[in-house]
Amino acid sequence: TPCISKTENQPQGLATSVRWGQTPINQSTPWDTDEPPSKQMRENENPGAAPWVTTVAAGSQPALITHSYGMTQPPTFSPAANVQAPVIGVTPSLPPHVTPQLPLMPGHYQLQPQPSQPLSNMVVNLQSQPLYTNSQPLSMSSMSGVGPVAHPGPGAVGNGHLACPMLPPPPPALPSAALPSSAPATNGQAATPLPPNAAAGGPENTNGVQMLRTIGVGKYEFTDPWHPKEMLKELNQQRRAKEFTDLKIIVEGKEFEVHQNVLASCSLYFKDLIKRSPRDSSRSGEKLELAMSNLTADVLELLLEFVYTGSLIIDSANAKTLLEAASKFQFHTFCKVCVSFLEKQLTASNCLGILAMAEAMQCTELYNMAKAYALQIFPEVANQEEILNISKDDFISYMSNDSLNTKAEELVYETVIKWIKKDAAIRAQYAAELLAVVRLPFIHPSYLLNVVDNEELIKSSEACRDLVNEAKRYHMLPHARQEMQTPRTRPRLSAGVAEVIVLVGGRQMIGMNQRALTAVTCLNPQNNKWYPLASLPFYDREFFSVVSAGDNIYLSGGMESGVTLADVWCYMSLLDNWNLVSRMTVPRCRHNSLVYDGKIYTIGGVGVAGNVDHVER
Image 1 (spheres, rainbow, N blue to C red):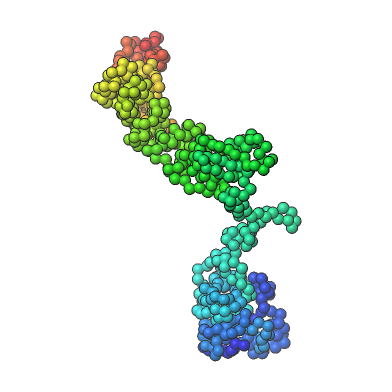
Image 2: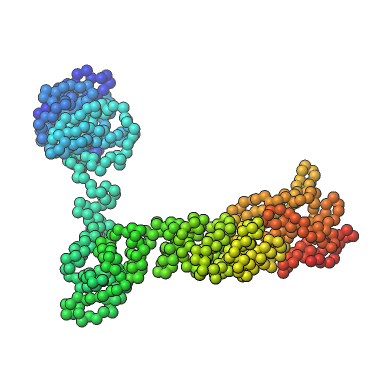
């Protein structure tokens, strides 16, 4: 039995005794009442007796007491801890009780009975009381077998009760849920380590069988998550040992023995092929043989490895080959794996090749991904050698797309010329067809005259010259653009061209007066933003009429300083400026304008002599 002695030099105001009570196993609180029954009886019998619990100090050396806290022989005293260490199965003699000066706080922890290796640490979780609002973890040092209660720590009673007055100032609050899964439980019983899934919150036993759901009173549905993998592992071992195999595939003189049902479960091609095969061989015990010439042995080995293991090593060298084989033999899961890999490998130097392959294999997911990627990074793709080696049809399809991301149509023209000159002897005959995919009307006029007009390929082709002349007319005759609409006059989505709402002029209130505005602004409904345009080239003009024709805006007539005007101005969107382009035969203001069949009509209004009752074109 450990030595029991009074603690010397106790601090003032601290309790001189602790409670005694046995805690039921697997129960988090020792008692529902503050005092044990035996203690209450003693209080009634001997109200003025001496203290019923003698305070002791925990030493630093273990005592050989089974399933109890070790105490020093002889003890060394410390004013920082009061501990009583009872022997299991021995009832201590209890002196009469003296009421403690401060409330007591029970705490529970657990010791492993005689562990073979020292424990690295122990955590005591204190139950919340009014003194501390949150549970506080208490770290205690290593114990080998039966060890001492280490310091600095609060005083502890041997059965897991802790004297509250001996607590140091509380550390930052830590919830009980934050304790590690290996934290001890209660009453000297070691906590069984939880499996990984159980620690995460899933009810799973040590054999890996997980309870999924309750299906009735006392009935549960269990599943083993490792079952499919273990079954595949066994089937693969049988395949390698050629056990229970019933299908032999011969490729390039090499034989592969597999199980028909396993292969048919992963490939619709082989499933249909096996169904159509004669059943005579299976009835006689002979293996079904398939000779294949449109597949290599290495690729088939990789496919079978994936079928029997669910895993495969893919790299940039075999990804395309594997995808072609998986698509041909309808290994749909394997196709998804290859597609996912190739999507991550897309670069400016290979996106067009992957695009062509996906189109040939009718792999929609990969085709859409590669196409969007190639269109988005066109400036980088245009500098790669790959674009010069693709077919004419693929090149035209790519370059004519409205989503081609280019800020300058000049880059599209230069790419077309480079593709033709890569093999001019054969490709020159397609010059006009290829030049038609270039939006020549959106090329700057100076580039059109100085570069495009002087290209030998253009000069040598009459059809190419016609396309260039069409672009020149588009620039020189802005008022006639409505009649020259072709696929080449449709801007690409990346050109920053959009249908906008334009406000021209107006009036502004300044105090009690008004003045005419010369500002011109436009609203882009796509992003809901306003942008300034070139201001009107005159001041104090009002009562004019504006109308849009093609990409330009026409302003006609109006009144300025009391004078009715007949001039017609044009705002050219490409140049962002106003130019005087014509004059009406009759000056007018407060009139209307409209565009019909490529012509501008002015209707009515007020002239110099009064109302105007005729229409002018």
